[in-house]
Length: 218
Image: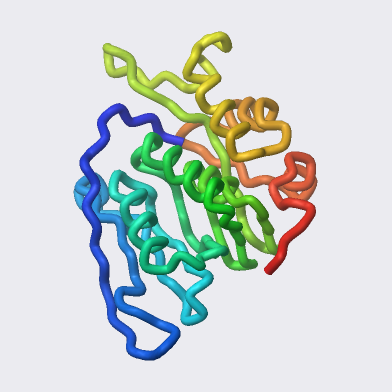
């Protein structure tokens, strides 16, 4: 998680064309985000499969990611599964929260294949699926968020008083997407690793927190 307080107006980059009855152009929906360009990272990108019901997901969640997702689902309303492959985090937590809520409300499921890695905000994005599956070998990473105080000192989330409303906002987000043990999971992320480190969940931790749902229809 990263806490950012400015939200840049998102625009959309749509790339690629494909002819054929089952496929329409565009089929690649890439977030257009100034912050991703500034940091020279790949922005969150959705690539729709030929069956038009699944999409592969890679890149950093950023200010244009909600618009990219919305445009994809307008072109492909039958999308039911997001296969997250490499989603290392979020450059804009506000956008990520909106995206998570939308994915869950649309009844879309999420999958981590054996070679997939999600960390930080990417893990949060995965958790928004109404049904979720983590295949053996996939990596799910969590850590604390952090912010700078007025003197430029980095404040870890675990240092912020437990009664602070900012903690509750994250807990409420997890509850909204139906996560089991939402509050316990949130505090686990706070203390499992600092903001510049990463803790990858063990098999036992994945099971304990219900990261994979009991049912998965794909």
